[in-house]
Length: 148
Length: 108
Image (cartoon, rainbow over all chains, first blue to last red; front, side, top):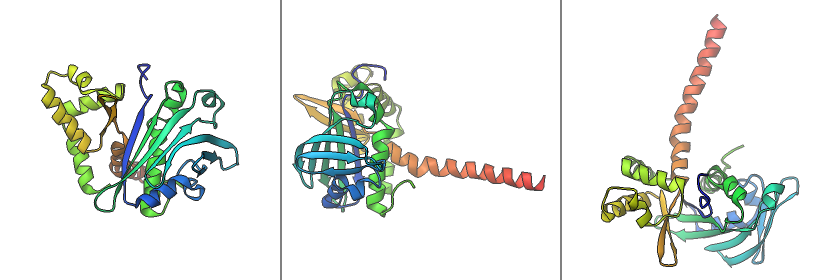
């Protein structure tokens, strides 16, 4: 957190032993997301990205900007789970799924347009996205969630 | 992550210049080659070679932005190594100490 420009674009990439369809399903259906995304039930349609807390609070309600199953999803991001973060501007999350040799896919998550959301940028960076993504990988590869 | 991916990450980290480049990106992400080489007393080609090793290990991901190629730190492989190696051994040491404590308290 030493400069103003830090963290306004964050890139996370990992390799998952799963098909693009399996990864797409794990990203876009609430039955899957609640097992690795802090318990959030996330439903993605071509129009909207909606995230519900375990207690039915709305954690996210944003527009879907690109919807190309099973390879590319772009949606808005506003952290409605915290009033302080929710007051910041909407940022953008891009999911890219690229099949590799050997039954693997690379999954690249880019969280950008965070210029107007410095607190959100700090809150999702590092452990934030990494816990979600390593949980997603573990769930797809072993059938079990990372924690609990 | 396969054993081969682990090898790449460990090899990439086993060099002070590459660790320095990662630290630079940690300070501020999304830098160009020109920015990164300015801090090093090394040829442009030398820095490119190091960045290629980091990219192959998945520690650096590049993105095009207009005419520029920007380098981003990808923290996920280090996290996975942490989960796989560091957690495992520190947990064991901690539980060994806990066992020792229990044993001493029982006999004492």
